[in-house]
Length: 340
Image (cartoon, rainbow, N blue to C red; front, top):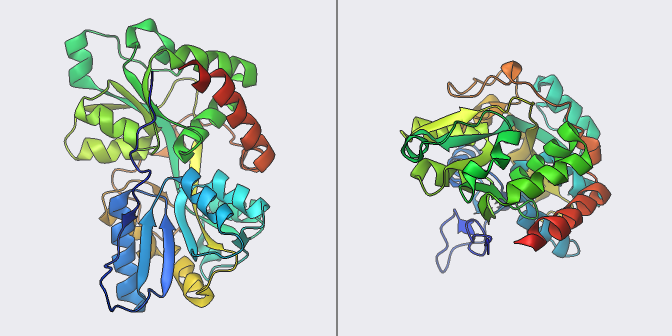
């Protein structure tokens, strides 16, 4: 029985001090990126603005669930980070506040296109290509072939040696699901995922967890965004990062203001800062390797060159719609998750 790990779920990472007698924070942010980046961004914005921030790290699906549950009395002001399809879904459900950031004209074309698709409710802050990574030392020990394509992952040689996210909670994993559908067609994609499922040892809540597990040798292969694998490789782990031969999808990470935000002006200041070169530079400062959306921002030295990767023409409008997302997740639960 494959479990869904509790990594990133159940226990929120509070990144602000909470001591008795302190005044309530002037801004509440849900963070969908790596914990280290959450902390770095919080510190940088507080130092720049003097605004105290309460920041909680959660997986994208959990953030969307919380914002939906609190739509009449929101406790969150800003949703920062995480895959853009869930931001688009929240926007289509009228859960986000339209806002045109001060630095919108500095955004790269893909970010400007995303902003337009969102109806001005979400701004793209970074991009990252999907892929997988394997532990080279473990591969050598097991004397297994090196995978280079998506279809390779269905090989019986990798039985119980692959880890992936759960698309119900992980934005990374939903991007994987949407990517496979766009690459192979829906029915063929689900046949592939059925074969791949036999090789999955665990579905995780957080999208970066699989590649972190591969880095530590807890599993052989982790499906994740390539920039998350680069971060682990830079830390000294024996990972080989693969851009699948058939092509792959990508994410646009986003920032959005929650509709009914209690600290609207502070929320606007946070979004403006998130789109500056300084705000986007907090990613590299935290050891992250996403491609920033501001044309004037410095590219992290380890960021994958997405111009060299075979990419699908990712349909954010379709796969960010509530109807399509819900339909695909129901099919995943019925045909893939139910067989575990």
